[in-house]
Length: 322
Image 1: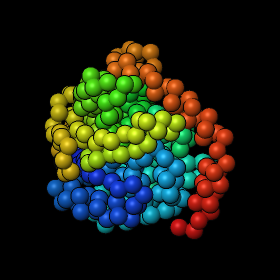
Image 2: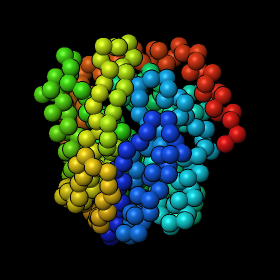
Image 3: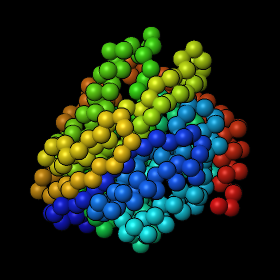
Image 4: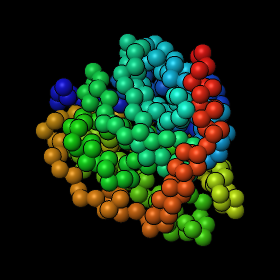
């Protein structure tokens, strides 16, 4: 069952995350979530990989957790204590694999559902496995669609969200600005940032449902596997925003840490039955330089598939008693 027509007060938290410091990042998030709840949010959304950090290196596996790890415990305890629905993604180890898993917990302290990222972006493919799925979490608030960062750029996501009849779209991101370089010139970076800022309004208009886009802020430094001369020294631009189902931007942050809370309209009569036609691989026009992502992703999938270290480390974390 979907949600009935009405308003919903939602909160979005934009924050910095330190690489590998799961407990520290959860502590940093707690007062921000409490602020959002104190302002009346029934649903609070945090960035992708909020507890994990974000780096294209094997060190990211150091921050992986079993399913019943610190992040899930924190989500359950915090949502129950504050009486809210709460969601973020973390690096989950299961069996011999690592997944980017977005989880929502409810006011009862139970897990409402989880979505795993289907398409690891760029060099993420060296360190995580994608998993297709419906990308919908059923809650007492209605059907929550989930597009995890890069997925929102791809042609399958609008069609999937439309076919699922979602009531609200959650868009958790850990999306830094690329550093200008010969493969990704400054004009492409500017276009990338502009598209990122316009992402939630595009989806709200296309689907006829509210969209909550959440990103990180702060500095970003990361190597690129196989390209040591392209160490990235950049930042997360933020652009966290809440957009209503008519496409109007209710609130948007720039590059600062903070919390926004707004009422949005859930109205099934506004939902669109079709979405704009895709642009090949992409949901909308993107900088041409992004087409090179496919080469890095293909190399990453091959490296990941052959990695014995990945299998060994994932098994060890999976078998850890949380």
